[in-house]
Length: 155
Length: 265
Image 1 (cartoon, rainbow over the protein chains, first blue to last red):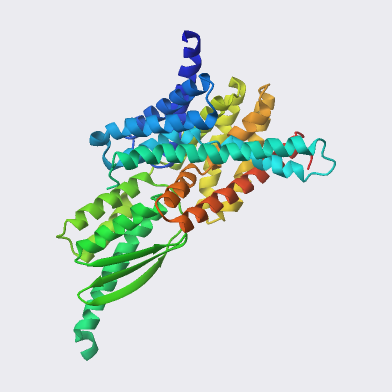
Image 2: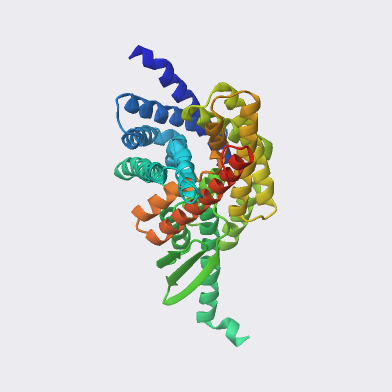
């Protein structure tokens, strides 16, 4: 397990940087940005542990979103109604944008002239697209379920 | 003169001012990234804070409608909604205002003035700070995807330049889908050329990481939230918008890969 630690720390660090970077884009205040970074680090750490345990990307993302949403809910007193937004910012690094791009590029490739092995290209594109749909669904459900059950306030 | 003193007309005018002011608050929340259920709750809180008995709302992708009923009078009003973005601080400020209004004690003029003040004075990070932060985020995304360190530097620069140019284009009113295509082409080309010059072994991945600033993460989760909250029309509209953005972004990457000889047109 110890040999996995550097990889885990790497993923958590860059998850934190990605979440904080997008937090700036979303106009979070400077006081909220460290919470975004912490949420990003937690989400990526949980997802990495899940994937190291041979879970699917979708399953690991669902677990990560649930843990992040629950953890942020515990900080409701400090964060107030912004806690749901912080959890969302933390999960942004898990949004499978690269798979989305690969899926669409794959579909574009299928229409290219003189395509070799069209079936394989199409299957890879469909796999990527399904992965995007299921992962986005897992993140959304993972964020929403604890927020609903724990009755996080929006105001 | 007689018409102005007609109590029904006077009450309608009052209701109209309340409805328009509540819609204005709702429009800002929606344009700042709030989900439909939050917008409806906020607008309802504001309207009820002025004694409105019943509030009915409908949200489309580009408009909000409200029906308010009080003292036997009912009116319906609609308001256009602009481009949907994300502005956390403004969204939270309007939510706090909705709570204050719901507790009573504010006039319509005071609330209108406060909304105007929030729009004018809610701080935003400078464009260059946002650009650098997005560059760092794209490069970090890249590391999560597996790019090497030479590509990290290239993606950082490509993401920073891409975000800065995107900000300028959107500020000048260029269509958001065209912006997505152009920025994808620009960022992917810069990321690709930089990676090649820095002798990276992950050029294709770096090009993809360079465009991750365009991935609409909040709208895609809002789409799901809206559907789960019982607003499938709005959720579907958001999902289609996300798909269109990604189609334009992918075409931009496609042309960039063709330009660098990584793919034939």
